[in-house]
Image (tube, rainbow, N blue to C red):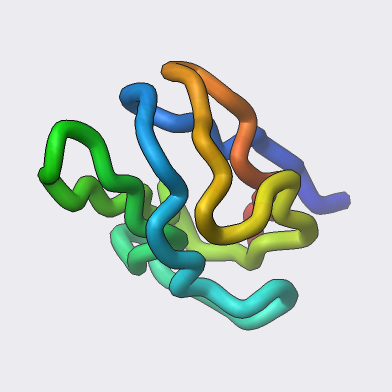
Length: 75
């Protein structure tokens, strides 16, 4: 049975770019998305091997710190 985890933002900011395609297999450390905060680009990375099952926001969304960006399924 697969385990699901939430991918959360580290800081408040704008969801600049979604890098990962839903259902595409990823390795630990692969970029999932890029946040922009105070003119800095901050990558959000896969915590382990798996895939994104669902994104909860679209590019350009303003997110608060610790917002749930996506649902990640460990493989």
